Length: 345
Image 1 (cartoon, rainbow, N blue to C red):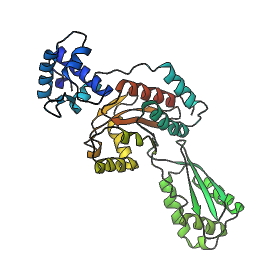
Image 2: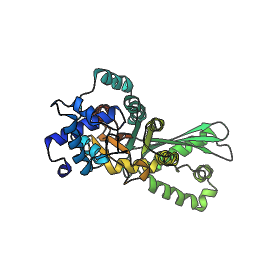
Image 3: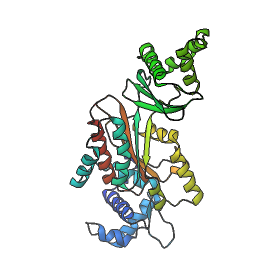
């Protein structure tokens, strides 16, 4: 990307000032505005000449003949590339510490992270746990509920806890549930969950399953989805409404498409996988997400991939307009990422 930089220091500095001015106020930036902001005392005429060159190089556009200039995606990308992560303010440090006080599990930390990132940045906060590729059973708990329902709690050895509620046609006693729970934990603890499901299905097809009371109850639970638990990454997202309040130059239909894309867990995971997987521990900035989804063309992603003390991977990110306060968001992402790393295993 270094080859895309403006060829003179003056051009680069003027471009940075234009981007900063546009981030502060989303209106076309006039040459007189930059002349007043620029420390070297460039005249408005000199700035106009530089802006004309930057426009020819694809860094600026001009919405109207008489209007000022607006930074392009190329300009925002260069601007973000030159930034370093700033030091968080004392208030930000305190906010993170207060939010994570008493957090004992990565899952709880992930839930708090998405809300915290939204609060700190006024943009979309995203947080996800990346489970082990092959998850093995640690143990299962079965809790009787009212109306012939059973709460199934599945704990895997990567410290993930998943649950679902199964509704049965017939009542199953607490004693029967305890027997089923013991049967599964004694016979299948340490099994890969997908292989456990296949083996359990095979055993239940045997003729003895129709005569053994325990297996009959287990078969009823299995048929109702005992092991139909989502073992994929746990994703939490907050703050999509903030995008509606931003001037993203989207039609109503394009905004609906964007919000629909953000509702898809698969799309969010693709976003995190594509831009955060290669550089664990480093804050990554991706400007312009149109390659992933046309509705995200005017958005930028700032995120980090970390590993908690438990060994589980986590990815957190802020999704917002290209016209965002990059240094501030980068600082917030790094602070929350470090807090996740320090959660006890």
